[in-house]
Image 1 (cartoon, one colour):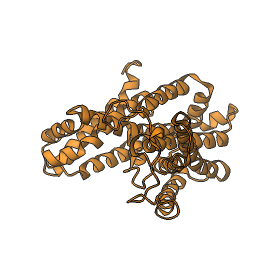
Image 2 (cartoon, one colour):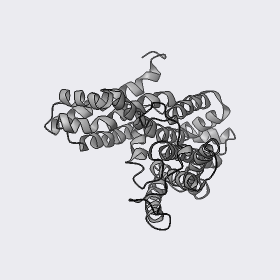
Image 3 (cartoon, helix red, strand yellow):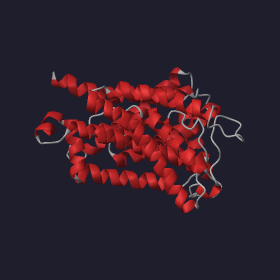
Image 4 (cartoon, helix red, strand yellow):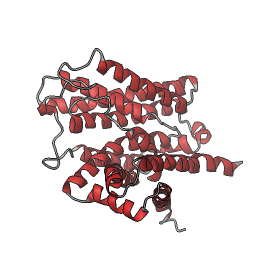
Length: 339
């Protein structure tokens, strides 16, 4: 394989594996893969409305996927993007409902509140790792559970909106909603924010001293330590910034899609993001492509069920198997090869 083609190998391999696994899962479910994929594309890309909904799903997956990749770059397995996204959404929902200021002031504050909430939640795991040597996998997993339970308690109890029919906060003023990219759709400028963030992170990872420190801490921690890089500080900063990205994503869902915080804010975006980041080879620009592919899966899954009789659980199975296979390939195989 040539050096020019090497960066494409990981994402292409991941995409092919995903298609093969999806086809096998459909066969096991007694459905036709051809009919299943045709229904998937019809439901996700069959018209302007379908495309806009696919891009909404793409945007919701993009932020936590970039968050996961950010932490992975520093050698940290952050599986807490789900909790960080929820806490960011909660903070954004509370800030947005309480602010009585013009939209051009409110929207940046809402997004900042979301990023701050996610950063604080990710920072907890960072402190546990940096100060006490705690395992970030266990810490972020437990924090996911705490975030879900805490958000549910607050929104069902003391923060429940009097006019709400479900477990949700008060609606944001219309002036605080993110502007739409397409009229009569749910697609907002959050997509542009996500694309800009992906491009910015690609530059940071490849062309800055901070990006070098992240890569060094993740790829060769002992060499990084000898080079004067503070691994504890890097771990703390990486987890906090990773959480901020996921929390920002939660804020965009609140301000751009739901227009309030609801405990059903995420159907598992933070967990699916692990697969998206790994399929994208932890490269922000490839993660853009992978997010769109998984957005198609999310948006078209109901069409698969309705028109091709493919159980919706097949999509969940494929995503879970992709996480397991790609995580094993990335983290277990190199250690095995080194023994």
